[in-house]
Image 1 (cartoon, each protein chain N blue to C red):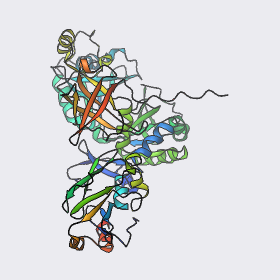
Image 2: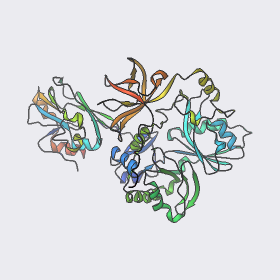
Image 3: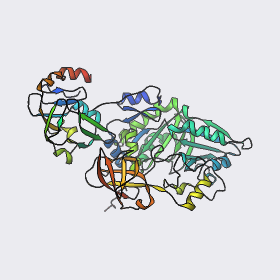
Image 4: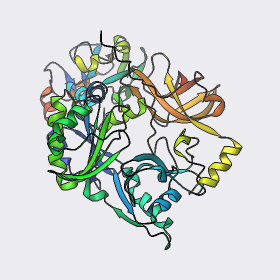
Amino acid sequence: MSNVPDNLRYRDSHEWIAASDNPAAVGITDHAQHELTDVVFVDLPQVGRKVSAGEQVAVIESVKAASDIYSPVSGEITEVNSALTNDPATVNTDPYLNGWLFKIKLSNPAELEALMTPDAYRAHIG
Amino acid sequence: MRGVSDSENLQRSPLHPVHLELGARMVPFAGWEMPVQYSGIVDEHKAVRERVGVFDISHMGQFIVSGHGAEAFLNRALTNDISKLAPGQGQYTLMLNEAGGVIDDLIGYRTSEREFFLVVNASMIREDWDHLQKLITPDDAVQMANASAHVGGLAIQGPASRAVFAHVFASDGATYPERNTIQFGSTSGGMMWLCGTGYTGEEGFEFFMPASEAEAWFRKIIDAVKAEGGVVCGLGARDTLRLEMGYPLNGNDLAPTRTPLQSGLAFFVDLDKEEFVGRDALVKQKAEGLPDKLTAFRMVGTAPPPRPHYTVFWNGKQVAEIASGTLSPSLGKGIGMAYLPLAASKPGTPIEIEIRGRRFPAETCKKPFYAKPASTPPS
């Protein structure tokens, strides 16, 4: 069973956001890291980049494929997890804490309401 | 992240139910729905390098070519000299078009004086068959049978392959198939072809059996592989293992528009044979010089893994696209192959790979990418 923490919100494309913070950390879910397996490279966005909800902002590469990562909300990238450059597998081993990808300053916090609750995401990944 | 799944119109291996039972991730490959991985590509890859792994290769095709004229016919259809094979021996060989381009790469075995067993790529079964059929003339005295749909296959690869063989075949009295040999026989599990071949650079063997017997063999082999500390492997690890050795994959590294001389496979082309399809084009190309050559490269420094179709730059100019590329699990570095101009193909030549709009440094290198560490002598 995948771990789906209760304090986060989720996008149907398997990103999570720490919805109670602003700027908020964003990462991929335990389910997503399990599906990808073997994360070998993470391409992170530029700090300062302004993005819209649903925009492709990062790329996570496994041995087999490159997968696009989408921003769950609109806002400005304030920080990226540069530790992943040397240790991308942290996304596999610790997806909700040390495996965060970037932090985003929300420009429209109301967008959080459109994201999945933990229960909705649990149902989504069945 | 987004997943893709389209299992419509795909053929299934006789081992399909076992793959699902084992939790394999199934993907479309060469018209088949096949397992890309079970526990993970890196884990499976390392198991084969260090212990042993078993792969489903039921998607591959098998032709049986027999008759008085079989040897002469195959020598006209294929690049290597099949007349050199004694019964029980096999060779890597190529099927070319008239322009010298590669239709398929395959293994040809002589199973008896007048019978040959060909193992061809899954995606090319129909095309290879049609091509060979067209080459047969009424004078040839050749019969061909396509066993592909009725045959399952397994590859056991890794340093513990012999131990796995001993577990499974000890009671049948079969002997381990040495490199490039084939044995045809029947055992308690039915008839089979046992081949000393593989696609990983490790010791190992492949064997083909009636599709109806495949599941029972697979389960027996899985037990033996696990007893030897190995795992079940998918096509993902098969691809990283073969690429670390610099082995070409048809469709990626071999193409109807490129000759085996360009692909670095001249060793498997016998130009001393008087006649074979594509020979004239190869002789001409050899005299005129190669326009490009399949060249190995590795990424320098931190970079995303190189992947097929990424653009390759040399001296600031766009010169090629990647044929095969991946992260090498053994080396932890990006590796790949591309058809580069001869002047750029010398090992150590700096090149660049464009990935998502940025250029990353790489350099050409020798094959294989991975060499087995020398074993420590006993003290």
